[in-house]
Length: 432
Image (cartoon, rainbow, N blue to C red; front, side, top):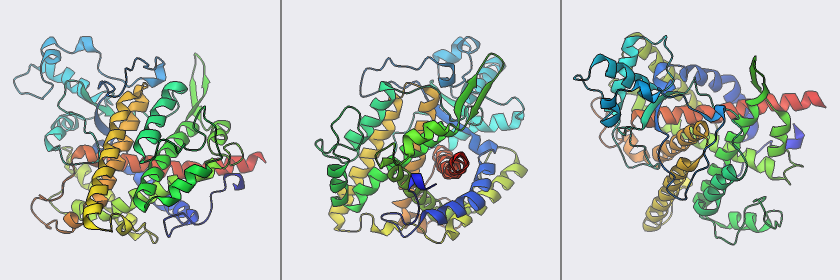
């Protein structure tokens, strides 16, 4: 699709768009999609009730499609609501059942009792660690498990000033950018076609440039999902979701975005390469015989781990990986300072996700920022990963179940975006 202008070589990489398309769409995406349907990867624990730490926020989206399905509060016994949601053997059976429902959010009733029990035990494996994300307090009474398959990411109607405010605070305050350098097409500002911005971007070090490109890539990926799963029909008899070509063009067409669309899509591919690189690097952690994707169903767990390792080996086989050795490679003292700055900026972005007014958007925003934060944690822990013993515990490098689920689901979203781009190319080709 020539109007998108996204072909060939990517900046700061040795890779090109066509190689990624072929690898993702025909090799990796189908396997990854299968993995994310499994019990281990479909439940994500999240606290959607945290207040926005940066501004007074009363802008919650009132539309049905913004909601994430929890257990109705009147079904939760008083003792549970007043106290801890930690699973306890002393609790009576009614409390246990409702706590289970509360924690699982929207749960598929076809799940076996063993799997439900195992889901409750997952939290025990989650230790906090020094990370790039503001971790949710998963023991908070407000934290609950959500079935990602029953709460898919799609267009909810959440847009306008509130949504713009979120992205604006991410870009303007957290991308190492001086206040006088305005990003292109920033709402309500005089624009010089991005000349000052791109001059600044070209002049900063590779790490700061990469940071901006990762955020832009994440933004592009989310916008592709919303365009690909748009509410096309909403009648009393049915709702129909599908690709909205006009919405997609408004966000990415070269002519309609003053040349910004292709840059956004190239940043999506850059994000893809960074997360793919992290998967290839973390293989030793998952390969250990002691590592289990525990749900309580032994046969299913073994199959899920087999598929997971197949995906990681496939990620490792990719011929044109991003070379992260260019990151933080200079003066050791300066590099350590920059790395910490990088981490704090990213942590701040993960906090901003608690200001998103649409709960479904908040859920997927939190998951995708945690997934990217986990990918960065992996790339900056290479020495620790190399030292992981083949048997016994991995003390130096750890991933919680929370981080694992976020890492693979976040990459699943980026992989889906690359696949959806192919669909939009075909749709636009057929419209000519």
